[in-house]
Amino acid sequence: MKKAVYEEARRKALEYFERAQIVLTESEKENLEVADFGLDDLERTGLQLVTYVNTARCCAKEMVLFPRQTCPEHRHAPLQEIGFIGKEETFRCRYGTCYLYIEGEPAASPACRPPEGSEAWYTVWHEVILHPGEQYTMQPDTRHWFQAGDEGAIISEFSTQSRDDYDIFTDPNIRRLPTLED
Amino acid sequence: MKKAVYEEARRKALEYFERAQIVLTESEKENLEVADFGLDDLERTGLQLVTYVNTARCCAKEMVLFPRQTCPEHRHAPLQEIGFIGKEETFRCRYGTCYLYIEGEPAASPACRPPEGSEAWYTVWHEVILHPGEQYTMQPDTRHWFQAGDEGAIISEFSTQSRDDYDIFTDPNIRRLPTLED
Ligand SMILES: [Zn+2]
Ligand SMILES: [Zn+2]
Image (cartoon, rainbow over the protein chains, first blue to last red):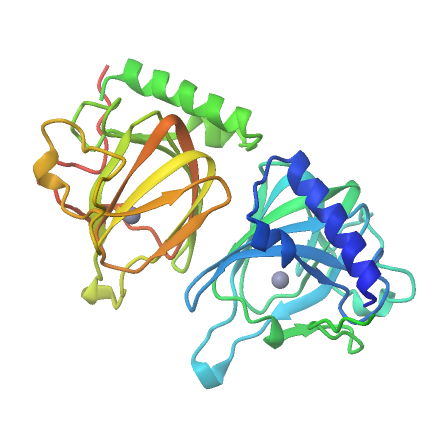
């Protein structure tokens, strides 16, 4: 990701947090994470986030999706080597609308479309719509992806330990950990 | 606790959440928890809270303390019978000021005093002051208590599983689970 793209996304994400009265420390603002998943198409596929805490036992994050931005399909697999049974996640919508797609009965006419050109990597279509104050808990090792409505979204995540490096994305082109270029 | 006391505390807590733009569902508003810890002195010793999620693995809550209200000293002990190593808690201040007291070097001149008459049951005096956006993570089985400043406080808690029935309070008069009277 170009540094300028990162800086612009960071600035916009901070505006969302400010409007929603979510207070961050200076260090959290400076280190706000912007994930483009290695696809270099942040406007359509990406996620902005602040990790409040991530210990061996639990984790909490605050995430921003820009309007119609998508966090691509993935699952949090168990790590047998370390006796980890997989990450359990609860998403709680704070602002805007979050369209969450999970395993299960597919929606007859889903509200979202995957980013153009990546349709093949979106395979789960059970739809859960989260408005502010609404939440959903996902079991470990189940596929999910999510997209914001036209106003974007702020979503709190409450979960067990986060090990982003072990997330398994359906799209083999995805690289979770970003590289910054000038 | 008298029902009227409960209803008044519930109404006031909802005002805090509204001012801070923290959106709750109707069911969360209706079931907002008011804990007087069996001391029947809610103004000085008490806590208002909404539990978003509490699974076998993790838990998230939103808590309100009214001005100078105190959540009394307690610890989250391990439960050897079920192989639980004790609750780990992160407090993140969202609004107001939270004065948190934990084990460690006592403050020379602490900002808070325990509720009058209960001084004997407040034994840890290492002071951590949390302003909005600031947070602190407590290890299992360590004593802690907290009090709001003059404007009250909203505090998010991110933790491992909550088992309130197993919390150990320093004050032997405390009963964590409330009883409602007409
Ligand atoms: Zn996930
Ligand atoms: Zn506690």
